[in-house]
Image (cartoon, rainbow, N blue to C red; front, side, top):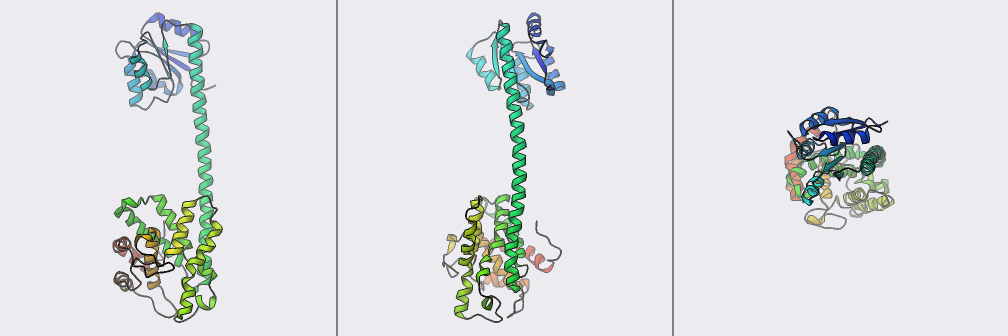
Length: 362
């Protein structure tokens, strides 16, 4: 049996309370309140036991309106159903009652069978809705847990694909991990500087996850070019540049995924992270804000990481030298927004480069 098995009758006329008690005493526990103050005190002490409140409007000390206001002020309007019992059948009374979310209005004098049936219907409906909401909440929680597990699995797959590139391109070891860390830092500042971009925590995390696939197209490059020691020839450079479009071809296999926003983010970063603000990038030579913002960010952090990483044909730049090279346009012209974020993030980047063993990505 439900713990909500008490009908509270708030009515100042003794004979009316007695009539109502007689109607409901066989099916429910019945509590009585001779005025609004007593009703409020009972509600405070026994909220979880009340199946329904039968509430008269005109009472001494505190009225039925006071009781409804108390319930509204204390977030109790959905704790149990309220049925007004009144002799006032004016439209104003109805409007006030329903504004306070009462479930029904029963007018005096009472008709025993009618009031019994209407009160029972209200209680049954409330319990049905309450139980349904609990079931929905439980199912929603299960779905959220499933979605979280699925997201964790998807992220493992995505990171694994990124690691494949790292194993294939020996000079890129831990490149994917660092790009995720740098991007996370940049987006933190971008969210504060540019609220119009609506970079919520969820969107930031999505972009960070998508960066893991920015170089996925390198899987399709010949080892003779990808692993070549020394500078590439013009034709080899052209092949190297094709990793952006090859990556998008690989991503096409994921185009049917349910999360279209995430897929589009992966695609944009993969295809456009080598574009430059002035149009001198590749593969499409687009410029300005035609470059998707996530790609603008990854373009800069990718260039920075390449500068501070050791390569077969050169030693790594120091952090300070790399920062100057980025700001001077040595690796191309980056978006003003990305550059502003980079300048604010410079100390974070320096610490990440110098103490990478002790800094973890969250």
